[in-house]
Amino acid sequence: MRKENGVYALVMRLESDRTIKIGQLGIFDFDSGWYIYLGTAHGAGGLSARTNRHRRGDSDKRKKWNIDYLRQFAPISEIWFSHAPQYREHDWSWSVMRIHGAMIPAWKFGANDCYPHCYTHLYHFKNDH
Image 1 (cartoon, rainbow, N blue to C red):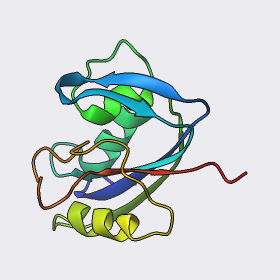
Image 2 (cartoon, one colour):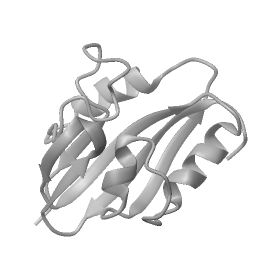
Image 3 (cartoon, rainbow, N blue to C red):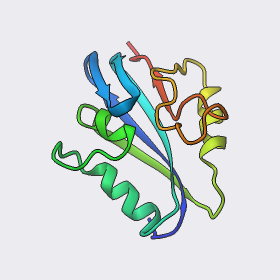
């Protein structure tokens, strides 16, 4: 992954149900299962810096984004990304929302800056058993 701008998706697994306070957004119940979070990296260090920050699961790091609160409990399984100068976060979000079984666990999660264009940038998929 290069230090260029782009869009990314964090694929995470939450092993058990949890109630988590997500900063100023509020308190939410998160069911166990798979989660996909969409983000954009358009700044210093690009995708490399942003995804490296997300990979750090330490609870001591400053919580800057909504995803930082969920990441304390949901490890990253995969990171999907694309280097692109355009903002594609919204396109990716709408694409994930159309996947069969996609559910919105927290309205506006990661999407405060683009609501109501995107309802959320976090999607939940139930366990496959």
